[in-house]
Image (cartoon, rainbow, N blue to C red; front, side):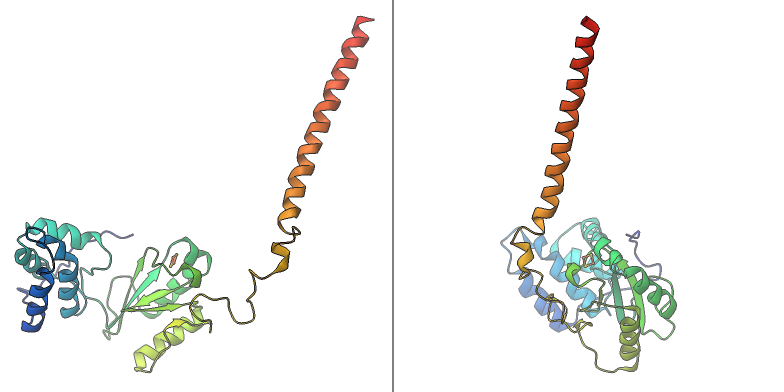
Length: 241
Ligand code: FES
């Protein structure tokens, strides 16, 4: 996880559009008197949406002021959650999951595609089309490796399918969300289903095999201990003669 700091270049000000201002007022009104600060996450999110998907310092301060919060409290929240971008992002903002299940399933190779195609992490590509960031688990581990691009998940990636996805996005072609390997949600891959319907799971031939090994190892230990005790007793008896 990278250090999260505000962008060096900041705009002079931030104001919600009249439509978003009205939305924010309705959102704040959902909370009981004295608990308006609880609206901070949706307000920060709306500010980010309006601001090309990143939060500037004036935007964070504006939200704090609307909620009657010390500005430092809003800054603490905005800098804590990786869902809030603190610097400009590309038109297609890629969040690459780098947590263990994704890493074990090939996230390292997906990361290389990001580096080769887009460039350095947290930097917008020259054409403004892409930027990327490695993040912690995005909750789609069953379909690892995966990335989130803007609001959508793309799963079961290979370097080839991910490269094609970036080509299609760059060219403005329609893309398929979700699994890129053809499976539905996190169901088994086509042709590889049936793991829980395998009768071997229930007839003892799988579980029984390792249990049998443990039982055999325990029996061998017992036998060795009994043999050692018998030898010791025999040696003691011989000494007495
Ligand atoms: S580890 Fe990648 S989505 Fe959970």
